[in-house]
Image (tube, rainbow, N blue to C red):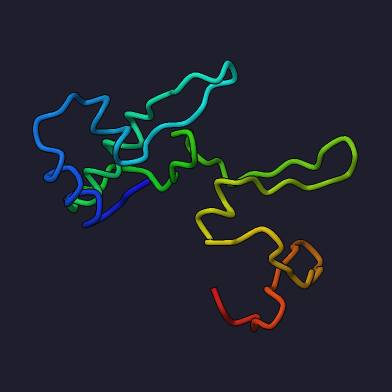
Length: 120
């Protein structure tokens, strides 16, 4: 999904096309369970406004698929704690990335292998 100046440039480049084509060409499309395409208009327009310097109220980010991120994780029945693709994408994490797990009294910290704890 394009953001910032890349998004603004693409919108100008595409010119007079339909709203669906505009959002799709900028990458704001996801697959539905039945295999069809879903155009994520809300995420597209929020990114467009953000690129133009207009911030909408609230702190919630929009994840892949246009859903608001809750920043809450739940331990699954098998004991796994799932972070989710939207969060790993936001952090630029790639498959195979390794982390050292640091346990505190009320927190879990994931430190990239080879990184330092001060990095954020």
